[in-house]
Length: 225
Ligand code: PMT
Image (cartoon, rainbow, N blue to C red; front, side, top):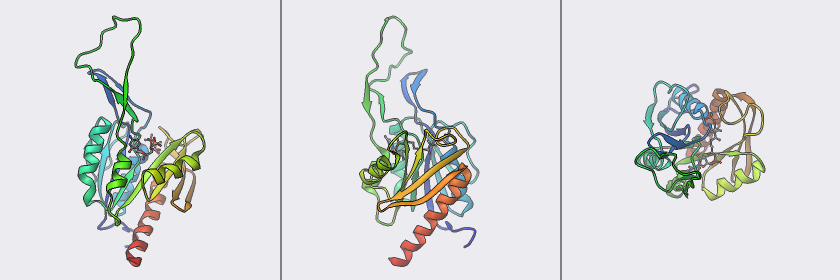
């Protein structure tokens, strides 16, 4: 099992950006390319896992050997995650999810008749929090945190609030880290603090190191049970 430490495990990964429609041709989104989450999905499959990739908008090709579920809005992504979560061993949430969506979706293209226009937004549900609340003790839930300041404090706060087992924090102000790049710089925390520090490296390498750590945690969990 040296090379396939995730054999027999089911891993669900979310990746990419959610899109919140304003009207049939316009939407709110963010800069996630999907690279981080797709690299995790690809590497998990290489390590022997049965992988489900729930993806929003992404600019990279989906990896081979994984089951892909395409979604657009946060609500669609949440439905896909919640309906697949019970059979998963590991859930990794690398998607960049919109915290708000337009209160109403115009059924037709909005015309520019007014000189000012107000766009009312309402809060989206938090998928990670919903997963955290529903997870079984045997399931490992890994969140991401994209921060621009107070990275460690905000990441640990998210870990606790959203009840995940691990949180992967990227300081998106560091060159080569965060949205769109081929590389990332991350620190991984559990409820007791820092557990893994990964300096600047390819997202594929971040994925490999993170999954090796997760595989190790799963094995230790099995021994102590
Ligand atoms: O896709 P790339 O271009 O490769 O970029 C990678 C990345 C920067 C998008 C990725 O590494 C990353 O940090 N993803 C999480 C981005 C994010 O939305 O972070 P957040 O701090 O806003 O959210 C924290 C966690 O809660 C995330 O796991 C997110 O998926 C989840 N969340 C957030 C809001 C919401 N309504 N539902 C959620 O599930």
